[in-house]
Image (cartoon, rainbow, N blue to C red; front, side, top):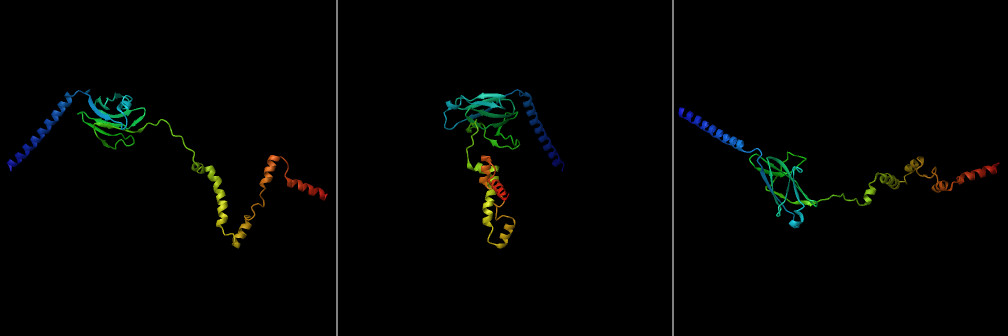
Length: 229
């Protein structure tokens, strides 16, 4: 029993010694490492269907919106020397739209590339390293002018307010069975069968507006009164 106990104690002590030794080496390495040490971020950009001389001279590399800047080599590759941290790498071109990428550099110089997600920063989508950039489309600096469409006019609230009552006036009489005597009585009681009974004539209204004269009905009434006298 004593031998088993001694073996377990020795095993535990050896493991603790190895852990302390490994931790001490890491501490020494971190102490020796220069806090201003720079690490290299590598990548390459390519534009299918275009010659390198057509787009590389006008392309610029921006890190964190311009904190660091760089340029592409003749083959489209680049190297950026930065300290530890998390950086947003973006390529700018007057006519090409590149998608930015994020690169994390730790104190040991390890790099991890992932997609830039400003809406959900905690959502991690890994990318290949060294970085690879391809344009997702052409830059558009102008808003496309809206074309004239009849559907947009029909969707207008004013048009809907004008058209719907007319549609109801046309369709409702067709949907109602006017031959039914009870419906006829109800319509007569509501004066729906004689809509022009108390409505002024449109032609008379137009002549009154543009002619400036009195309504012809009043003249007739005056003439009748004169005869009675």
